[in-house]
Image (tube, chains in turn blue, red):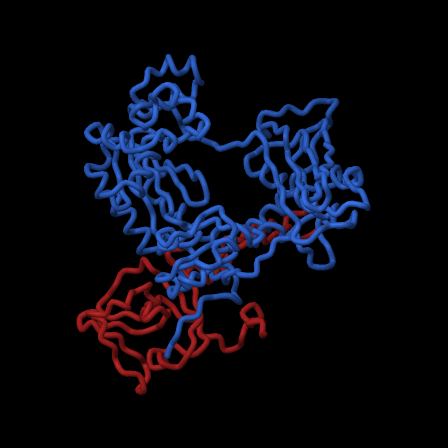
Length: 419
Length: 137
């Protein structure tokens, strides 16, 4: 039996833990540069706030409903994430920490007689001991546990806990769109529609071998998983990306080479950090900078690329390679509105063979220390000199609405009143 | 409660520090102050109402949400949207302060009351440690 437990509106819920006055208000959490809403509390969802939309388009709702708006507090979410996963690991030793707020747990099939009651117990325990609301799904396979977790939160009557078994499987899957199934993206869902497959149950009823020929091996595996036959294991669900981009519009136009360099090196380091997180090495990056369309009749885009003969995940190496290329993108007559870096060729760090001709990689120590410090204090706390500036730059992360780091800073402890 | 693990080697290069083998014997206050890491948080007391129970203004409190309850506990609770420290008499359903100016509060029927966790330790700082000094302004 597989259980999938995840935090409900994890970022927004975490903001409510040490500031209980927020528990009755709608809570919104914004992306790094305070622009886009990335998390909503359930109340904010009901009041019509929209995720992944800019905050300035929703300002009237913020005022109308007295919503609380926060910048992303990585130190706080990271520590609560660690506590959530640690506490969940006490329920099963076979745990897979899938994302900041999602953990899979594996159990012996006969270990528990009433999975719904067990799910309620987990949910109650995590609420009592961490004040984090969760959703719990149980199923015979990873895909079914994910579907059960979805049903627990979205379908009426489950109140946060769902166990998919032979008796209710068809009924639950018939109420879910095929795009709600794990691994079925919108494009794939559109193609499946041509085959008459719209609900999750439609997909589960297909012949895996037929769809394998028309689509892929993974969809055949998904069909089997929906029918209770395990095909995926922890290693199969690592969400490794093939390409990683970091790009952002400047708050104010950039005119100097120095500012452009800082931006591009900073993006390159972000891409490197993400590559490191998924144990990838960077073999090639593209760099680009563009003007805004409306400034001139034509939008100018300049781009170049860097190829690494020996793929690397070393911050210093990548910064050193990106920095001298910035001048190729620079034209003193242009006002730059946007810049970015993409790692377009990634290789697996564990599979890559270093040989005599490519040379040995640099010692990993410095990059590891940078990662650890930034994990604790938030991205960008320690970085390579070329990404820093002496003055406050408008493109850098603005975190003007940051809540206190209640759990990780002695100076920001929650205050409890004795009066 | 959370440290960045960076190993430090002491002594002359090439010689193992004689202290290295004994590092397990260090006394860390966490060992006696904290029982369950994932359910415990640290807070700072503000105000005089709990002096009768030995909690003074600016004391450090260690609160465990998973600590077993007893008939009478010092707790942190949400009362009207704020985190407060009170003693609770569970049988009578009342919150008690440790100061004559504050009257007991009946919470057996209160909807704005929620228990957050049990104060399992308090720490008096007879001198303020530099790490805790709040940045003014």
